[in-house]
Image (cartoon, rainbow, N blue to C red; front, side, top):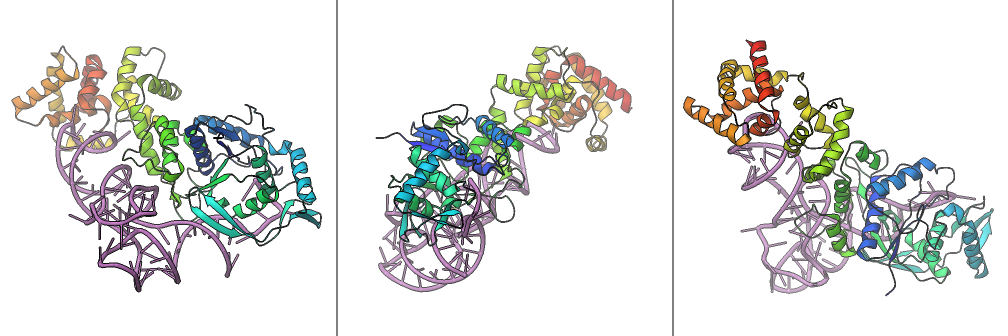
Length: 438
RNA sequence: GUCCCGUUCGUCUAGCCCGGCCUAGGACACCUGGUUUUCAUCCAGGCGACAGGGGUUCGAAUCCCCUACGGGAUACCA
């Protein structure tokens, strides 16, 4: 059996967006699943709209999402060049073949392809048999001498030995043109797989570069985990047929195949994207998590050099299970590292409405002063026995404790919080709070 | 307009090819309750769909036809 060769063929005319990324991803998954090759081919025949920045953004985005290519820019290969702008010689040769066989004619300076008028049958791996007839002759070389997409696309797929064409459904109608060309060249026709499009979150139509959250850059900037973004993208138009949706990429590669691809378009859902990201944040190995979060804390001026490594580790570990996304880390942990932090006014109001927190805190203070073991288990026992002695619910101590030491109404689990903060800080902050509020 | 593709909870989807196991399963979101409180974790429960109409069949989400709706293509863009 011959080796699978698939290609991702973007044109670098804008920033790398979700739709392109997902097409690249499906090609990559198929290549890895079949142990074949992924070819990255840059379709830059439109000199007017191509930019080097867009190309760089594309390569960065591919790598960020963990998609490597076996042939193409920066890696080379035996079927190059991989930029269409450098393949004009090949295109001229192929054009000559069509001329010799009488498939083309010149008109108004442009070269037209003479259509056969026959029904073209696509045996699509996703949609089954699709039949379409190309009615009109079409241009393959512009009057300025440059070749047109349909022509270069087919010529490259032939000359690069592409075996499977996995692309968006928006190309399904174009396929009859491409089939005409493959036939005119008497070339073997690759298998086609037209994958569903990604629709914009609101309104109608497919997702475009201008839509919120459409650019890969957006996820990079907002510190989404790349594995999470990739996992979500896999789920748009493909399903693993398991109840579990959050899967390691190895498993996705193993399961990925054409029968699992859906026919209907999928609407992009930022909430589910965010949910999956949160799951990945929670599962992040501690060393990795620390590496990602540290620069944020430093940048936000929350961490200074004198921070005790041991303490930092405990804080980060404590907060991970409640952290929804990486950029929230500063807000979530600032009070661990700084003595001046803002108090949440609404929570404070609530606290004082509930009773006399100062009295409660004074009692807590004496208990905690005499508590030598500040582990969360020990704290839990102490608070529970205090509650029992006073005939109240243990939870009645939680908000006073939390608010007086953090100025917040929410955060990590209470005993863990007090334990990590440590006896010195807790007592000092409670005392300060009592003084300032009585 | 013409051509092509599609249509299961608000959203992503399982089931459809090979009709009965489907009083249609899961996930996100939402709502309610629980847990270490407010909550951003976690757990339990709830809400919620086979686009409509005709066939075929003992039986249809599953097969066929029509309609409606959605998407795409109709460029000397890719």
